[in-house]
Image 1 (cartoon, rainbow, N blue to C red):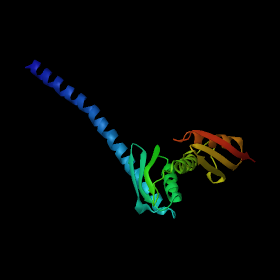
Image 2 (cartoon, rainbow, N blue to C red):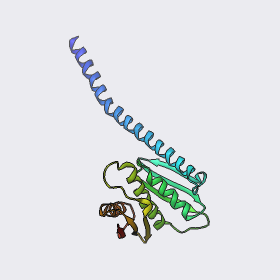
Image 3 (tube, helix red, strand yellow):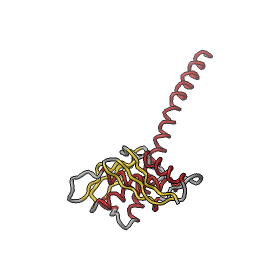
Length: 184
């Protein structure tokens, strides 16, 4: 009888130990799903609050911190602003706007999206960087041509200029960064 109880206890403990990892995985998946839902809601709210973007024509989905924008915008400026808004969210790992189109155009907006991602990265840096070097996003002009990003404008010190270049280099699609930033 003791052997039977021992076997039953062993089997029970084995079953419990096997189910704990699946509970942990389910919990992790739930946290990611909740986080993705919160990111989607925040990006949609920010698109709705912006005067340039028409949130009703831009679809937002998030999967593992990657925001997918799709739909049709009225202008390339609106499409770029949508990417910038999404990129500026501090929980966003990446923005995929490959399915976002400009009304009446079949041209890809790769350079415009890169510019928007760089600007959004500057804003995100300033939001989450409570210590260290902030990049004056409004003082830096960003232009992209065939993946080459050119930064210009005026900053207060060399650390800001260096940080701007570093952040621009971190953006997907950037092949090179040229800095024409002046330090006052």
